Amino acid sequence: MPTTILTPAENRFLQLSQRALKLPDLTRLMPLLRDHPTIKDTSDFLPRSARQALLDQRVDWLVAGSDAWKLLAESPYVINPSNQRTDWRHCALCHKPVRYEYHVVLRQDGHKIVVGSECVKKFMSDEMQYLMTITTEDNIHAVAQYDDLTAHYPQVPEIMWDQEALPNLPKQQHQRHRWVQKGTRSTVTGYLKYRSTVVPDNQLSPYLTAYSDLQTADRQATAALVEQQQQRKRQAQQVAEHDEQAAWAAADAAQTATEKQLRASADYQAYLTAVGALIVQRLSLTAFKAQLAKLTMPRSLQKLINSYQLGVMATEFAQRGEITAVRLQIVPRYLVADLNRVSRHLAAQRQRDWDDEVFNVAVGFDLTPAQRQKAVVLLQNSWEGRQVPASVYADLMTLKERLAQGQALPQWPAAVTRAFQQRLDRQPQAGWVPARKNHVTPQQLRQLVESKTDFEQVTAQFHRLYALPQAEADVTLSALAHYYLTVQDQQEKRTAATQRLVEQLLEK
View (spheres, rainbow, N blue to C red):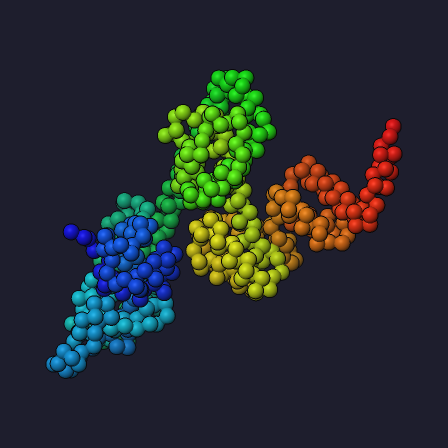
């Protein structure tokens, strides 16, 4: 018998809540949810990825949605005076007529809906159900009083409802935590059951003071736990590095002369780099194989590996960020290790380039709004960009002005914030400069020369945009100078004369 994955009421609840949640996976499913009120595991319109997302995240989405709503303070509860069902309003979720109306509002933008008592119990948070009971049975003004109380003491909802608060509180403090929760709940309940315009400051004070002490203890315990985890991670990394070095040493000792010659060859290195460049794009398997077919595999590798095996490795890298190819026992281990090393290096470079571009699009370059919007779209379309919430890209459009006003960075994922802050810390005291990249391609160098008429400008722009190792920078600038002069000679039709003179100067 088919199993219902999403009921019509749950569907409508997610659609109404989505504007506040802004969850990328849920946003992508919105067109499907709007077209199909009921979704079953056998629905022929349901793509496999959408089915898996619903199975994996449906409960989390409903829980997140329940916290996005609150009872409307000025009119939380209304009884329809009519005895005729045809005169009753309909619940926004189950669409049934309801005589006992609960008016709820989306915290983010104030959007109001009417919900019946059963749907409040089914979809709304414990906090709302608590207020619903008091509002219905004791005090119609309880929601307004609760809003006033939490405006004065924003930690009260955390004490009463957040089961994940203080996750690392030491065990010896648990009894005190329960005392704080029980006392806070009793005080708030007593305050809400009767009409009052005075917040119970004195009654709450001992519990709030104790909770502040508990928060301090939790932060200290969390910091100690993080340090322990980092210490274990460092130790594990040292062991892994030691094991890796030992493995490389053993592999080197066991290598035949043919293997060493193969791994040192330019064809081998070039092919691995080309395959690694495809792997780090995280293409679909079909697209990866189509691009792979365009590469010419060296004859020396044709008996060692094939497109199927490379496809398995590409899929593994897309899922885990590394290649072990445990399933592919017949593939030489050195080849797997080399491709893993190349792919991880290229992936790290891609991530650094993306982080550089995020910074430069936001503040490093002087861009018009239209130019910045176009650059933001390009960032968002890359694989690295698709791992980041959409809100980050909206923030990039106005971040430069906000930073100029002394505002802090927005609440971004930790990795994005850390990368951006590192580049921000390297900014000079006056003005904004781009984040300099640590590598450069021939195409980028060609654009650099073609956009400037004076080589001093080319050099200045190169140093402004790139920070290469000194030896590499020297070679690159020398090549740029050669290229610049060659182009000038071609344009002035003096290439042959210049070449003759250079040959004369080089004669000993």
